[in-house]
Image (cartoon, rainbow, N blue to C red; front, side, top):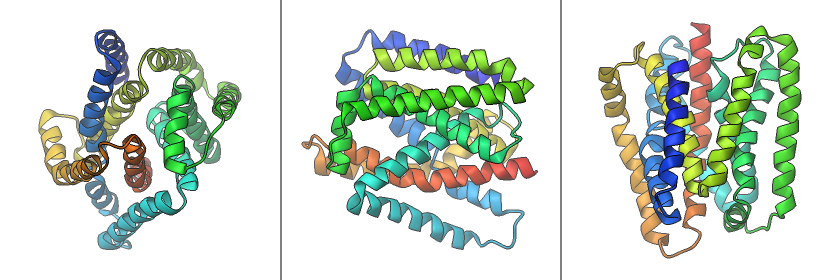
Length: 297
């Protein structure tokens, strides 16, 4: 994992360097391009992961789980249509846990499941709030477009300070309970500082894309390939890409339809994040079960 972290750090600073050469519009275009490629791709193999997870459990039906998966996607979409404020809150909470779990799942051995779940969630929420405070006006506009309600600027800063203070308290608790944590906490705090620099100097989409691709999607794909095929090789990546290709194209087609229908509307980015949320809910559930299966084996 050290090699992956080093790669992500170097690539992040490369992203900062690229940032100085492009306009904000160019950053947005490249950011969406990255999200559409690696970002969407990393969640396109959920059905294969479900099959692998259930391979040793004959008490569960693949088709029943598939039905649940589709139902969750539809419920997510309906929530954004009928209760957008609640759906947005759930999306932020679920995404926070998902980001935190991916970042921390193989760094330290979990001794308390509840504390670990809270820690993962708070870390992910801290990342999101760190991104939000450097782009408050744009975040406010997107929230308003999605939920039809105005969020005061102070609420976004309160969200950040709550996540930061809670994270630091949890770090203190873990520091005195885990020798593994003591060895990596300084590096992790420095990484947060790197993320702050990226978010501060980049546009909202470009900053999100750098984190989402380099620190979440690519590490997640690596974990998925190791889970599915045992090792990380170029041949296994081709297998991974081939099995994900159809679902990846379907997702891109759905986004294209949104763009064609609303390309002249200022709330396309709100619809885009709503679409991401609808497919994120079941994806998070799949990844949680993948990590549980890995630990059990």
